[in-house]
Image (cartoon, rainbow, N blue to C red; front, top):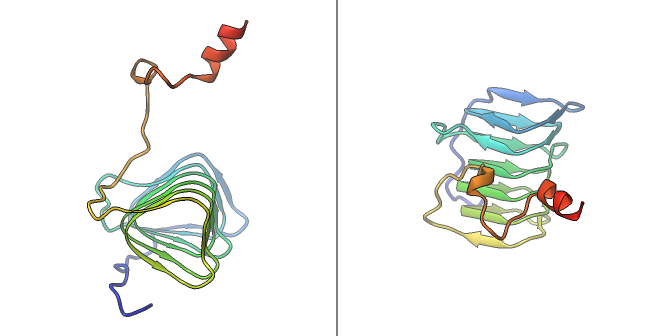
Length: 149
C-alpha cells in the first residue's frame, strides 16, 4: 500500500464462501480466504510460517486469530495476533486487542481494543488449560455452580 513490504503471496488453499458458517476452531496452513463466518478461533498450523489469512469485506470471525500474516477487510470479534504482518483495509472492524509485528492500516479501518507492537512476536497458540493447570485466580463455571448449590 505505501511501498512497504507486502505480505508474501501464498496461494489460497481453503475458501469459506459467502453464506457458509463454520462453528468451531479452524486450523489451517497455506492460504485461507474467508467470505463467510467462523465462530471459533482461527489458527495457523505449527509449521505454517508463511500462511496467510484473508478476510474479505463479507467475512466475519467470532474468536481469536493467531496467524503470521493477515489481510482483514471484514469483522473480527476477538483478539488478533499477527507475528509477521497485519494489513487492515478500509472496511476492517476489530473488536478486541491487536498484537502485531508490522501493521498497515488504511483510512476507515477500526480497532476497538488495545494495540501492542511486538517486534519479537512469536506465533502464539490458543492456550489449553487443563483443570490442574488452571491458575488459582481462574474459576470454571461448573466449579462456581457447584459451590452455589
